[in-house]
Length: 566
Image (cartoon, rainbow, N blue to C red):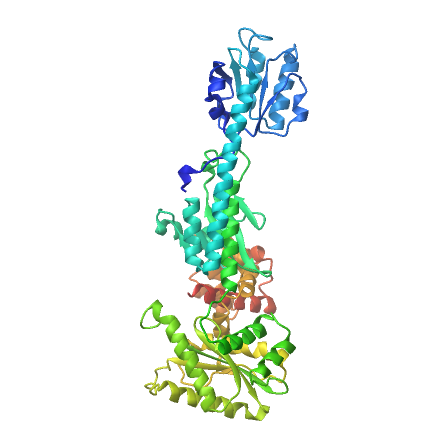
């Protein structure tokens, strides 16, 4: 189904005039040619002057004119009332009231309001016209219904199959016949399909372009940019936007009335179903592990997303032989430093399975008790259950040494980091706090990928602020923070690309708020630099002499760099 084959839900006035029952009446357009592409929602026969009060808009009104006002003012008011209520057109059969043609004042009023006014110069039973038009409407609605049913069926299948984001976006673009883009909250493209158009043109300057697209509502059409946008997320956690391009020039072709400001309903349904499929796919993680390993993963996942009561997790873990109550708990994450395996994408799942097996064997060799499972596509997690807090460092050192033996990794050359990272969160004394330790370990492991030091186990003190922000770059809350702190300035720079005030702010903060040094670093005169700072303050509504405000902005800048560093 392509853009060119999109079927409008309602026929246009032009299409109605081409129907045989209407052509039988020898129709002649006398006014309002500009409105011929208006959609016709219904056909209404009327012989009273105040019919407008009974209409809702988009009707094609048929009349013989016998009940219309006799005076010019009354005819103007009649046409004005029809135009105000939004009728699609007026068809007048000649012969009963008007013999040679409709009054000139009526034609002039219709032309002024852009209302199609048609004369039927031959007597025609109105019932034949209404039957033909309504049959066309019902047929078009059935076509639309079938298209909507295909959308639901297609995305239901994708959900069941666990399709990745790229496939969901591809299918959406195919069904719409239009480019589709999936982006995160920082306006970075996660997946796209140009629908046969130039991908380079579609994505060139995407972040700045996307920041200009500001529709109202969770799903809405931005008429100025021509993009239909819906928010992507689940369980109250939004993490992106799905955008479908539908230029406003296509609205008339799709049967959308001028000024309605929205693409066909079918496309709104399409982007919302695609967004739901994307959100569901992010929640689902398929796995081919054994039953025991599946339970381990279920319990670790339950701790991370609070999907089960903590007491139930402890009870089920004890049934597996892993006692978590009244133990010192430490979250550990093991991951490869590189996301991309040497054997290409197909080697990823096998590499992850090998790492999970190595972690399990290392825990056994170190005689440690733990829940352990793959946490995502790159990392294996373990929740160590130790008898006492004093055993924490000793247990971690033993695990790291055992893992090196199990993997038979040679010691890296000086200055060369190890291929596998072991990271541990802060130890906790309660199962209710275990999530914090696991999340911290995962964050440390991600951030440590940039660290060139050779450490057996990375802990929180080893990771700086930039590293923490880098590992949190996909976290919607961090992206929301960046947007809240810098969104106004980023939007301004998008509208004024020659100024780039973000660079001015960066220079000011990196020079420790020393304006003279910052002006020199920015290659600007001090008056020009001061004027730019004042403008930044107005745009962001902040006091740039405030230490707290500048600290928040500096963190937001570091976070923005982390988000953009893909």
